[in-house]
Length: 191
Image 1 (spheres, one colour):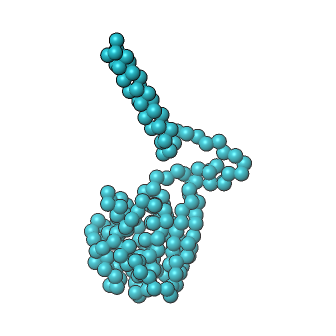
Image 2 (cartoon, rainbow, N blue to C red; image 1 turned 90 degrees about the vertical axis):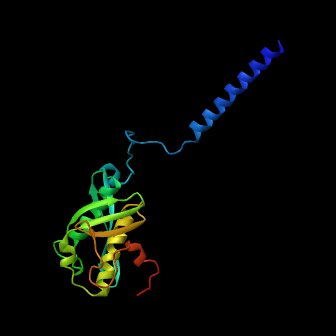
Image 3 (cartoon, rainbow, N blue to C red; image 1 turned 135 degrees about the vertical axis):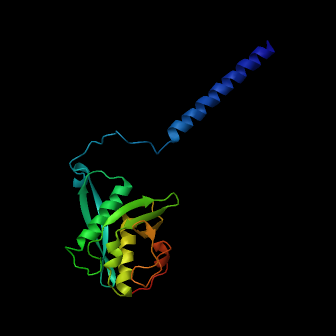
């Protein structure tokens, strides 16, 4: 009879332990998948939630600084689509805000996110050929691209520019671009 009680007590302890572990596991999970979950939108909620739009931050060169512009785009975007839309807006914004820095007829050939957190921007050859600026123009253009990408995708650690799928040494002869852009903006001087 002693052995039967021991087995019954062991069984009850194992079941109790499993219940405690399962309860802790299910109650502790905070990051759950919200796909397919529809929120009830109240009257005080922002308009962007109601319209299924996303806010994009675009940094464009303005003299010796960057000016931030925020635009709303309808639709729900994944992080890659958000960056693509923000970069297209940056290049198209040259027509409405004359920065004089963004090369004419520049276009995005492709965007790639590496497993190492490096975000590759593949640009058209016209981006390289049509750039005509001094050292400050080149710096502000590269910084505007870098900041625009980082502001619209939190997963990006580094940004690297490619021209038609190939690395370039420099855009205007002032900065070495074989390395990601973050290396240019580590310690900045205030102007």
